[in-house]
Amino acid sequence: MNVTRREVILSSLFGAGYVGLRALATGLPAAVLLNPRHSLAEACADRERAQYVIWATSGSGDPANANVPGTYDDPGISHPLDAAMAPTQMTLGGKSYTAAKPWASLPQGVLDRTCFFHHTTLTNSHANESKVLKLMGGVKRQEMLLSLMAKQLSPCLNTIQTEPASVSGELITFGGRVLPALTPTGLRDVLTSAKGPLTNLQQLRDADMDRMNEALKSSGNTAQRAYLDRLALSKSELRNISDNLLSSLAAIKANDVEGQLTAAVALFQMNVTPASVIFIPFGGDNHSDPNLARESQQHVSGVAAIASLMQKLTAAGLQDRVTFVLMNVFGRSLNRPMRMGRDHLGNHHCSVIIGKRVRSSVIGSVTKLGSDYAATGIDSRTGGGSATGDIAFADTLGAVGKTIGAAVGLTPEVLNDQITAGKIVQAALNS
Image (cartoon, rainbow, N blue to C red; front, side, top):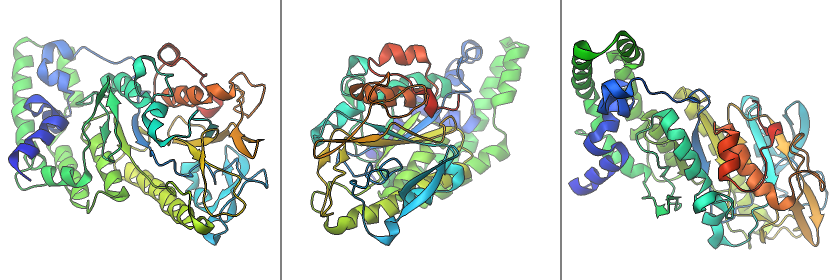
C-alpha cells in the first residue's frame, strides 16, 4: 500500500496528530489528551447507557423477513422446504415461537437479548435504501438514524470520530455528506505492518503519560490526578490490547462477512467510532431462486455470522457494550407457494435487534393484505400486533427507529424531538 493511501486511512481513523492512537495507547479520552486541565472535569450524563452499534444493512432487499418468529402462524406464508430451514421451536421472553431452524439455533443467551420487530419500510425500491435508513424522512434534517445515534453516542463513548464507519461498501451519509468506505483488508494492511501504529503503542503511551503527569504535577488538583490514575492503562494492559488487536486483524483474509465482523469489532476496541456498518447476506434479490435454495443457504450462513459476531464481542469483553441491528431496504413476498423466488415487499420487513437492554421478544405481527401480507399496527405498551394499536402501520418504521435509539442509550426527549413518527415500544426494552 503506498504511503499516501496509508496516511489517508490513518488520518481518517485516528485524527490529526493521530490523537486517536494516543487515546488507545493511554486509555484516556482524546479530549483529555488535547486539553488535560479543561477536559478532565467533563463527563457524559448517560455514559453508562451508551452502546456502540453494529448495523447490518443491504440495498438488495434480502428475504430476512420471511423465516423469523411471527411468520409461522399463518399457513399461507411460504418457507423453504430445505431440512436446514425446518420450522423449529424457540423461546423468546419465556414464550414459545416457531422460526426457521437457523434462528432457533442461536444460543439461548443470545436469544435472551434478541428482539424481532415486524414493521413496514414504506418502499419496495432498491434505490431507497438510504431513505429507509433515514426512516423515509422521519429523521429531521434528512439524517440517517445511524448517524443521528452516532452524534449522540460519540461524546459518551469518547470515540475518536463522531461519524459511523462502513466496512461493507454500503453508502452511509453523515450531515449530508457521503462517508468514505473502509475495507477489512485495507485496515489489516495499514495497522499490522511492521511499521504500523499498533506496534508503537508503548512509545506513544510513555510519551503522553509523561506529558500528562508533568502538566498535572505543576497545576493539577487531586481530583484531576485521581481521574488520570483511574483511566490510564498500565503497560501490561496496553500490551494485551496491542497483541490482541494485531492477532485479530492479522487473521482477516478477505473483505467477506468474517473480515467485516473482525474489522467492526476492532474499530470498537480502538474506540475509533460509535457505529460500524456491515453486510450479512440473507438471500439477496431473489426474484429467481428455485426452491428458495439461495435463501436457505444464506440464512444458515447469515445467522451463523451473527453467532460468530456475538462470540467475537464476548472475546473482546464488549458483549454488554454493543447493540447489533439488522435492517434492510425492504422485505420479500411471503405468499410464494411455488417457492421459485420472492418479489419486493414494502409492506413488511423484520428488523433484528440484539443487545444488553433489548428484551427477548417479538414485536408486531403479520396480516394478510390482498394477495400477500403486511405488518400490522402495534400496541406500544404490549408490543403486540394490533390494527387498532396506538402505533399505526405507517408509523411502525419510526417506531422501530425510536426503539433502537432507546436501546443504545438515546433519551426519549432526543428521540421524540429528532424522529417525527412512531413511538418507543417499551415492550422491546429491558429498561
